[in-house]
Image 1 (cartoon, one colour):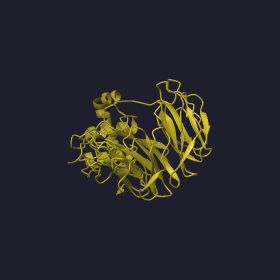
Image 2: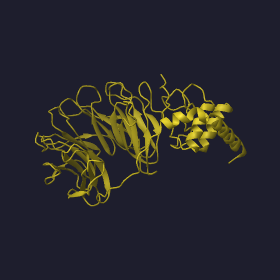
Image 3: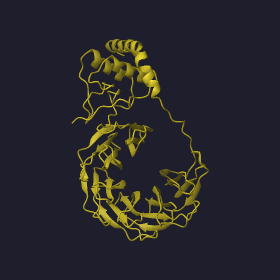
Image 4: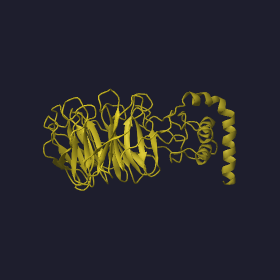
Length: 405
């Protein structure tokens, strides 16, 4: 470490020692944890998992698509979050995506699975108690990568949408009402689609489609009958690989979050209220993000983001600060590399005591080093960053910037 950095670090540590009593109670009150991960065996090459009540006992079981041994693993919940040994269903040709939904109207969750090797979708009907009948295959496009089940034509049964990497389109299979499906209709959806999500994006009470492809995110608006208008493409990061629709800004319409595998970030595209999307704002996560999911993770009634990072072998959690706030994941992490360490402490000290310019995030009006959002970086912010870097405090998520106008 250079001498100047060492001096600044010493200043930070002194500030922390003086100010620990001020902030330690707040930090302790907001501690939380997860139990250590427990692993349960599935098949070979698991690629996709879906949680749903498969056996009708009111808890969530797991269905896992295994690409390498052409199987679906069903793991029944024991009722306490542990799972019985997997029951494997041998079918398909390279399962890469699984979705559970009641496809035939008998109140049991059936399975729809994308087969990358045979260019079709397998449907396995559940007759109760996780007893699945023989698969029925339906042709789709080339190299299907993602399947999503939703009522696309407004007739109160669940249809299927499939993203096809090889043919550059989305296949829509309408349900005949009994869990069988009409021939697929294909809609162009950008270059190499890898992920599809169905949600009402334009507020007209039908499900539109959002598709992540290699260079953009495509939105296909539903015409109201399960047919779709031409795709409109929106720029995201480098290599969009997963898309999820949720109300991220609290204005009662569905926005999009996109994991970008090559740029190590997540793009958030806010809905303008009519199904068109604003310019993406990008937020750093780990390396090689392959999947993004939105849910209320901290119990404050807004949707946060969880991102699976293949390259860095971890999960990034981005806490949403709630309307009229925005996602500001780099608080207390001036370098925005997903970990608070000595360089972030030095940077915070430089801003607080040496007059260096601070950095702000997209859509966020205040600087990354202004941890408590009082408009200026001071000793209190230095104390908080030191606590995270050296004392094991939780990363800074409880203090968030209001979005810039």
